[in-house]
Length: 416
Image (cartoon, rainbow, N blue to C red; front, side, top):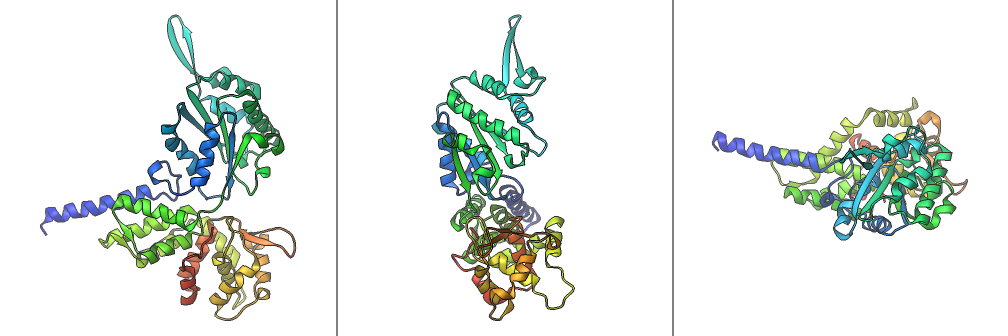
C-alpha cells in the first residue's frame, strides 16, 4: 500500500472512532431523536400530557435511568404531529432554590415585546421583577401566551428543591394552570421512589398530573442503544458481546454507552467492523481502571477488612449480580445462588447476612440501603452506578469463576 492510501485508510478508521465517541454518551443526556432508544410507553405518556390542555407531568425514578434524556428529545419527536409550536424551557433545581428563584430563571427565557416611539423593543420577563415571584405572577405571564405557542416548563432534579413552602407553591401553581386552562405544561423531573415524596400536597393535584415512573431499562431497550449506534457506524456486534454489555449494565443506560463506546474503539483499533467479547473484556478493564475516584474509593471503604479470608467482596459481588426488580431491589434469598457460585461452595443466607447488613451502615459507607420492615427487608445499591462497577471490579479481580460468568451472560439475566 502506498503512503497516501495508508494515510487515507488511517483517516477513515480515526473518523469512525471519533464518531463513536460522539454518539455513545455515558456522561451526557441524549439530545438527538434518531439515537433515542426504548422508553416508548413513558415517551407516549409524556407526549400525551403535553398535548392535553390542563395536563402536567411528573417523571420520577432512580438516578441514571434516563429521565433527563427523555425530556430533552420528546419535543423533537412530537413537534411534527402538533399544531402549536412547542417551546421547552428547561431549568435545573438546586438545594438553594425557592419557588421564586426557579420561576425567575424561567422568566429569563420569556420574551416581552413593547412598542416605543414606533419601534419594537424586546425584553425578558425577568427584567420586570425586582421582588419575589408569586404564583399570580406566573399565571399572569403565561396567561397571555399566544394560542399558537405551547410552552413546556421542565424542572429537572426537582428533588433537590428542599424548601417545603416552595414545593407547596409549585403544586398550587400546577393546579391553577389546570383550573384556568392555561396553554402551558409543567413537567417535574426527579429522583424518587414514589410520587408523594416528590410532589407536595399530592392529593390536591392528582387529577391534574400524569405520573410517569421510569424503571431501569429492559434488555431489549439496552440492545436498542447499541444497535442504533452501530448502524450509524455501519458496524455489527457478536451476540455474546452484546449480551455481556447489556447484562453488565444492570438496566442503566450510561454503562451501555460507556462499554459500547470503549468496545467499539477497541474493535476499530484492530481494524475490525464487528465487536466481539474480547473487545468488551478490554472495555471492562479500561472502565475499571478509569473509574472516577469517588466510585473506587467507596468500593474500597465498603470491602476493606484486616481479617484474612473475609467475604465482604464476595458478598457485595453477589448483591450486584443477583436478580432484582425494576428499581434494582433484591431480597437476601436472591443472593444465595450467586454467592454460592462465587465462593465455590453451597451457602445459606446466614453465611452473608451480617456482611449484607454491614453494607447499610456508616463504617462501610452505606453502599447499600435497606428498605421495608424486619423480616421483609429489601436491599439495593444506594448509588445505582456502583452496581455495574462492582461486577466489573469482580471480573477484573478474578472473583467470578467461569460458571458464574456464564450465568451472568445468560439470556434473561438482567438488572431491570
